[in-house]
Length: 230
Image 1 (spheres, rainbow, N blue to C red):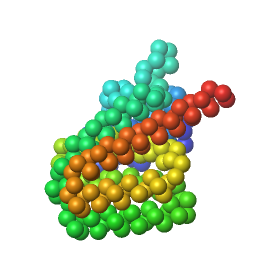
Image 2 (image 1 turned 120 degrees about the vertical axis):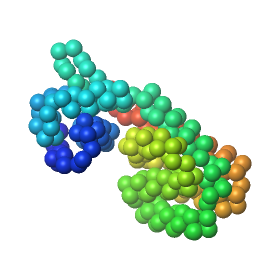
Image 3 (image 1 turned 90 degrees about the horizontal axis):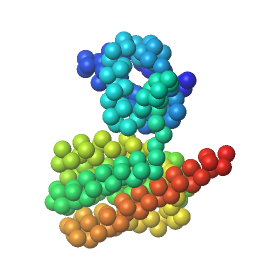
């Protein structure tokens, strides 16, 4: 059983919702690994809740494709497949492309300056070859850029996929053979926003986020090959 310490739930929201979010985060981040059996009595005790809200949370996780019920084994955590990851990226990227006109329209000089400060921080990490720190900062750059659209409903859909993306983005960035060259595209994206060049922005963003998807899929394929050889 994974060494996870769940804090007692003292929030005012429904217990089933909090249990769902806690378990979902733990599964997506790998704290509860693929293949782990979720024993209701044990997890209810650790979450300080009864089994009824836990079962409701597990049913939601099943609908999300994160767990599955197996005969004689109970609730098992599913492994992510290549198809899962491709679908997650496809949803995320399609939503991100919808935000581009609003980003161009809403971006202020202050927004541009803030994005350029992040780019400078990324420059330093690339020079130091600090990929572990670079990966979350790259995600933060993209999140800040996308947030400029101010389209709350689209942003909620994007956010719903971002937790998955965060898990895989580190794998994707390690597949990039020349980080400095790839990072130039971030500067170009900001340049297009500053110039209000929607067509240039749209063309480069489509290429940039599809590259990220392909790099992640490539990394996962290599990982699966190694697991099969083991």
